[in-house]
Every structure is written in structure tokens, then in C-alpha cells.
Amino acid sequence: MRDTRTAQLSTVPPVSRALFAVEVADGPWIGDNGAVVARTGERGTWTRSATLAAVAAANSSYTAAESTPALEVRDGLLGWRLATTDALSWPAGVLPGALSGVLEMVELGARTVANATLWSLRNDAASGAGLWLDTSNAFYRLNYSDGTTTRTATLTSGQPSTGQRVLFSWSLAATGALTLRQSINNAAPTTATAAALALPSAWASGARWRIGRRGSTANPAALWWRRMLVAPGVLSADQLAEVW
Figure (cartoon, rainbow, N blue to C red):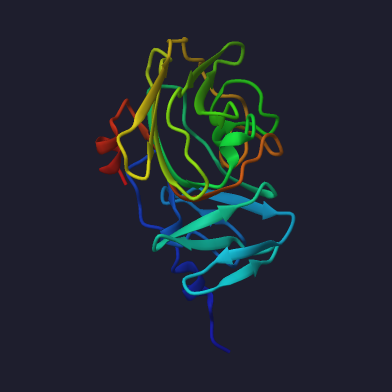
């Protein structure tokens, strides 16, 4: 019988210089154990509690079973479509400090759902010190909590509509100041900022990188996403592009 283990493990992503990086085109799904392996090596977990219909492949559509990720092609690019029934997360070993990051996605209507969360660094209970990108139900916003007080950088222009590709880049300064940038269909970005708030000594115990949720169940969002990255320091969008 042919040993398939080598073929299955050949999808292990390349190494990244980031603190955390995952890109769907790397083929991060490993069939042996269900791990979703980030480019930076973290072995994440994923579940979905229902099938997902009408997932777009290259030349047709299909229904993704509960046990398989919904890989979907949009504009010739491979991404992962998340329903609100998806839970996807990775361990996060990063300490509070100056951080920057990127999330590339396609809008599927999450913007109009209050508190729907695109990504987060939060524990299962969605409490304590953390970072997260969610929506006011009109605009997207970046949030940072030291465990007691929350700072929020809310965009005041730029409302992506369903089907538009969105690139978010963001930074958390060493002072605890926030900057969020949003580019829709490669247009010039709109920007929001929030005032400084001293960083805690640690993020909440059990905090994980999550896509599509704020905690294990809190504030799910439907989206198609292509990649996510977090790097040390305060970096511009161009500088972040060099980290992959």
C-alpha cells in the first residue's frame, strides 16, 4: 500500500520572518490531524458546525462538508471562505509591544453586523487584554484593551460592499496608540487612529490568533480571507509586504 504521509505533509508552509503569518495559497491544511499550519509554524485548529453550500471553485461550485474547509477562488486567487459557523485559531506566543499586521479579505456582509469580528488576539471568553478588528455595523474599527480600558480606532469613510476585496493594515505602537488603514479594491487607503494607552505586561491568558471570531464563540463574521500577518514594530503597508 502506498504511504501517503509524505504527500500530506508536503503542504507545510514556507518559513516567514513574521511573528505570525498564514496564507491560504500555502496549502495550510494537513489531512493527517486536521491542523491548520501557519507559515510561522503554529498549528491551529478549525471546526465548522454545518455544511457550506455554493462554494466557488475555479470552474464550478460545490458544498463543503462540515469536516473540510471551504476553499474558494475569487479573482483568480485562492482563499478560505468562513461562515459564522467556522471557528479558526492558532496559539499566540507574542508579548505586548509594538506590532503591525495585515488581513486581506473579501467583504461578505460582515460590515453591517454590529461587533462582527474579522480577526482577534483574544482568549476563549473574549475578555482581558487583547486586540481585535470588528465593525460598528457601519464602518470597520480596530480595538485594543489593556484588560480594563479599551481604545478604538473607527474608520469614518470607506464602506466595502459585498464582493469587494479589502486590505487592512494596522499598527499598535509601543505607547499603545492605534492606526488602522483600509484599502478597497486597491484604492488609496482610509485611515483611523486612537490615542495611546499603556500596554499591559501580558495579553490575556489563553489568547489566540483568531480569524472570524472574537473568542471561542463570540461575534462571528462571514468572510473570504486570503492571508493574515503580524510583525514586530510599527510598519507601513509597503514594509509589511516585504515581511512575508
